[in-house]
Image 1 (tube, rainbow, N blue to C red):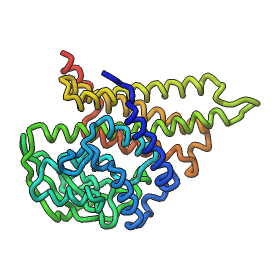
Image 2 (image 1 turned 90 degrees about the horizontal axis):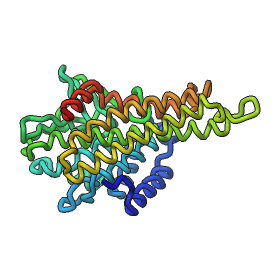
Image 3 (image 1 turned 135 degrees about the vertical axis):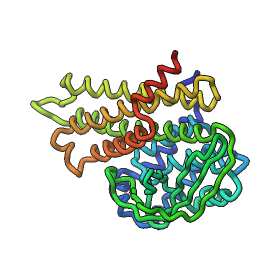
Image 4 (image 1 turned 180 degrees about the vertical axis):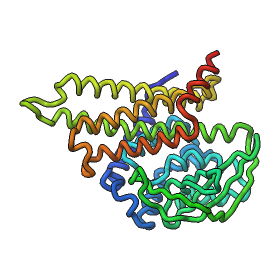
Length: 339
């Protein structure tokens, strides 16, 4: 298995870094919940022009037909720049919409054209919905498994987004979500599991991107901040902790890249490989972002320091991952697969 980026993948990574650095720096992310609809729509159109929402969609239906490795690269950069639109969930969802076809074809066409994106809605047992990426004019999609080879998709009416735990991603809780359209889609067996696996991997990549940015920020501060006549990074207690965080993030990233490769290659080990990724990513990302704040000392707990924004992105994503499958549950499945 080749865990190195190809030339094309390096070009994709560099292009994503340049684009997001110019179009969506952290200063923009800070005011995400105050952005008006036209500004968010313009940003989405720019993302669509890059082709990123359609990376995993088949070429025959207007997508790029790329794999999870390329999607992982973009998702990680989205996390690094605290992208305030739900690009990752749309990337994971679009191939499923393409497969569903039928009445859902128009939903797919609107996204392909860059005319719209969909907030990610999680329906709760009491009938309410938690919506990530909510905002004026933004419809949400809730997807449920209806059978071994069928999905139920609900298109929900827009609701206003507010700043939640993560102020860089507007969210909403709708007690009684209004359903605009519903559709039952006949899909291949395993499509539901594939959708959830793609989403878990890409959320893990986004989380690692945010944590890596926090680590870079902390390492830079440790090199510059002088205390008692020398940089604080010269202290073993600080530099060893930063080095350990780098190793943990790199381990999780390599696990993610290996899982994405296995998924693209349809390897027999793909299902098991994908179990390790959220487990490693959650632990490494939480620790790295928490330590980034500690490295900054008193400055780290101020609103003006960006470190807390990375921590909050990580906490939100890790909560989303663990709500679907907890760490102990993942470990149990890993042990079962190894038995």
